[in-house]
Image 1 (cartoon, one colour):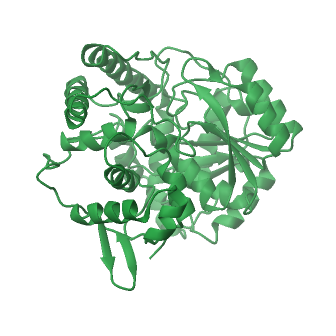
Image 2: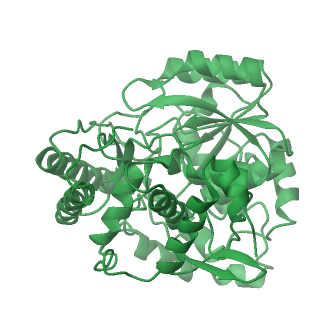
Image 3: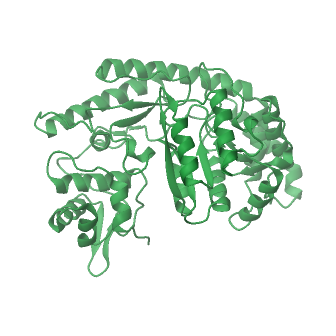
Length: 466
């Protein structure tokens, strides 16, 4: 079983204090970081006295919070062994809900139309592969060639030997982190950004340095230049197209500027193109790697085709691909062959997939913005050029409290702090628009009921603006 230090837990909790009893607010925030995956089940929590010191509260407050978590079934305590997060929780009279009806924690779509036919075609083509070992550390030659052709069509000539096939984009990020980072190295990340990239970099001991990304203004490149200069990061991770969660995109000039800055400081710039295909109306821009041969690109088919198809890739220079393959051999022995063959088929119908996703996302975005305008007129919903979610300023509500209240209405969401460092973005909420319009409208109505429930829970006192 794993454990978490008091200092680490305090950092995860961020600004947890709200109006009302401190112990209840602390218990709710611990539940929240467990619900969104930052605190795994069976993790041993710090001793009450240690956490009280780290948070600057009395031991009585922590003791009452732990007691509250035990009442909810979220914490188990064993005499002489400490307190552990539970795998489940019990409903109580005050928090009983209908169970999860709408899961908006994932910005993901059902399988695209061509996926089933492509999997069948892959199964029909697998015969020759059965006479081979099935272990392809770098990936099937035909898939590496298909990925190289994909980059070539976008104006970035690529040799198949520059491609390493992975088991999804997240696997690619983790493999890069493990290969390039040693504990204590600095890694530059967007603020906010994809949460699992934060997790992958933190897991190898990277010290994270944030640069701001705004839904309307985009990247603060002056801040980025200062971060490169002051911290000399080993690696920088960015999502240049329809950034998750803001939906912002780097302009051509900004791509060149960022790539030059990374080169000047000897930083490996990692460009995550997982969301590159999710263009609603912007039009194509050149890959970030076209600005510098040292840029490393991560891609995958989870957003374009289906999340259940775990195929991704890394495009890099040949020496780095060889190094990544050597590191990978200690972790796994290759991506499943059948899924690689399906990926070859899917890349052959790339235009059809993009057109289908664009139509679905356009409809979902319209439904989400209309529902927000109807149910939350006090919010200003952005109108991104692409992507899968809105990054909303949810003030005067607390994002974390909204998420907890929403579960009582059957709506699962991810709070803003999950996308940032040090508890930032408590006044932000990510709402995916990947579902059908009816589901989106119903979910936003449930969110409104959650907000009103939060108001009633505070006896109609003004809500805190975080």
